Image 1 (tube, rainbow, N blue to C red):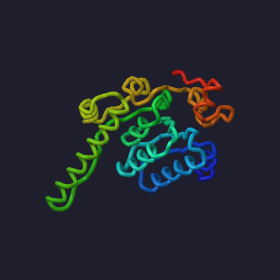
Image 2 (tube, rainbow, N blue to C red):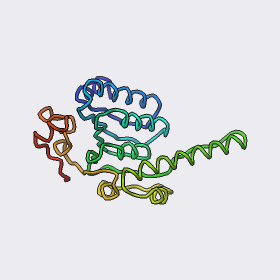
Image 3 (cartoon, rainbow, N blue to C red):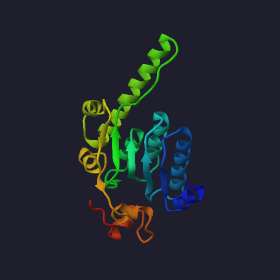
Image 4 (cartoon, one colour):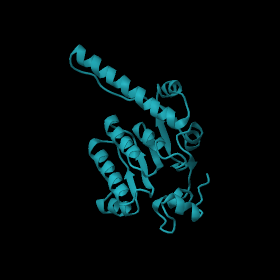
Length: 208
C-alpha cells in the first residue's frame, strides 16, 4: 500500500498494521502513536490489525506504547490477528476492541530457534519461557481468564472465529460497519473520536 494512503489515514488518527510485526514497522507504529497523542492527548487512536504475528520484542514495544500514551487505543481486527497480532488486538482500550465478522484470531505460545553452546541454548530457552509467561499474563488480564487457562489453550495453535473471540474475551464487539465502531472507526468525520463528544453524538457501539 502506498505511503500516501497511510499518511492520509494518519490524518484521521488511523494506524494500519497489515503485515508481520517487525522492528522497522514497530518503530513506525510507536512513533505514529506518540505523534497522534502529542497532537491531541484525549482523542482516540485507531489501530487496525491484519497481521500473522511476528517479533515478540517488536510487538511488546507497540504494546508498551499503547499503555504509555494517555489516549484510548481502539483496536479493530480485520482479516487475521494471529500470535502477536492477537495480543495487540486484545490490548485495546476496554470496551473499544472490535473485530469484523470474518476475522480469525490465533492464540499460541511464542516460537524460537535455539543454537550455540549449551549455556546459550539454556539462556535462550529461559527467555522463551519468560516471554511465554508475560504474554499469558497480559492476555489473561485482558480476557478475564486465568494465566493457567491461557497456557493450556495456547499450548497448541488454537484458532478462533469472530464469535469465539468475542466469547473468549479477546474483543468486545463484532462490527460489520464503521458506524458501529466508536467514533465511526476514524472514517466518519461527523463522529468525534473524543470520548465525551462521541457519546454526545450518539455513536452506535452495539454488537452486530
